[in-house]
Structure formats: structure tokens, C-alpha cells
Length: 221
Image 1 (cartoon, rainbow, N blue to C red):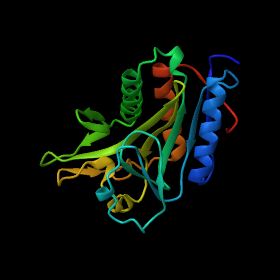
Image 2: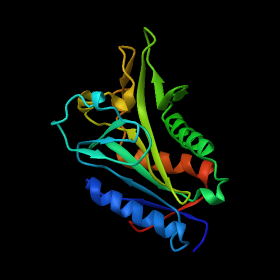
Image 3: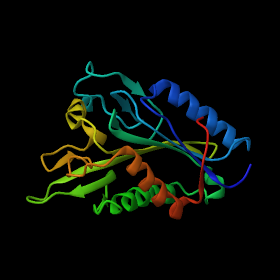
């Protein structure tokens, strides 16, 4: 055991329920001092998840994709191919036990990742996640979502970063409960960047370490 944070990536698409079981198992092991902290990168098949604040009215197409109720924070979100999900299993007992700071650090991580692609990401009061301002008319689109859960001060769930998902799939929900013609969803591809998932993973890791600490390639949970 050491203080290095594990960094693992799964190929292909990972079953959501299996991922939750693996996360909970790893988080318990971290809390008990039996495993190192871990960031797990993956992609899911198309699905919707409902956080603890989800409102049924925001599930606009309940029969379109599987819907999973989860204990993470937040409302409805979409996961699917082309979106990089990062499940973050960190021990907040050695990070000040400060949940607000932790969420702000996750936001900083995502904003710094976007900066590596010359994209300005921003946060907004009352709107969770990271947003990109679009030219003309004051439109703002969400490019990354955040939803975490803590158990014994160890985090799990994490962030979802839109690389090149099918943005029409978000139409089945009101993403994170935010509606209005001035708000939408975007991705690196939608912003005109033809970027590989490997390049995104490298940017995520490079931006993560100054915020949270050194990482080392690890086996999957």
C-alpha cells in the first residue's frame, strides 16, 4: 500500500451494474486500508441514470434506454459510447473531509483538461458540471457532468466527459434537471475537435495529477 493513485482504463463497453458492484467493492477496500485509491476510465452502453435528486418529469423517454436508480448526487444523466466516464475512488479522510472542496477539485480537473484542447470550460452557480459558452445569443452547453457518492469518506461514481457521444441520446432526459432554449449539451466532436479517446485519457491524467496527486497504471477493479 502507498499513496499513489491507481489509474485504470477498460476497453470496449462496460456493463453499468457490474461497474457499480466493482466500485462499491473497491471503495470498501479503500476505506478498510486494503486497497489504493483508484480512477477507473470506461465507457458504457447507452443508458440513463437517476441520482438522488432526480425528478420523474425529467425522464422524457422512459422506454428508450435502460434506466438505473443510483445513490450518487445529482439528477438524470446519460452515459453511452463516445463519452469517457471516470469513476473516482478517493479517500477524503486524508483530503480534509471537505466535500465542497472535493467537488470543486473535480470541476478544476475537468476545466484544466478542456484547457489542454484550447477550450474554455466554466462552472455556473446552481448548475452542476462544466459548461462551454457558445458564440451568438448567450447559449451555454454542458460538456461534462459530475455526480459522486461517499461511503465512509471514500468517494465513488465520478465524472462524465463528452468526447464524441450521440448528442441526440440526451433528448430522452432533461440533463441534470437544467432546461431552457439557452442550455444544451456539447462534446469535443461537436466543438469541431476530432480527438481520440487515448488523447483524452492522456489529457485527463495530466490534468488530474496537479489537483489530486501522482498516479500509476493499475489493474482493473
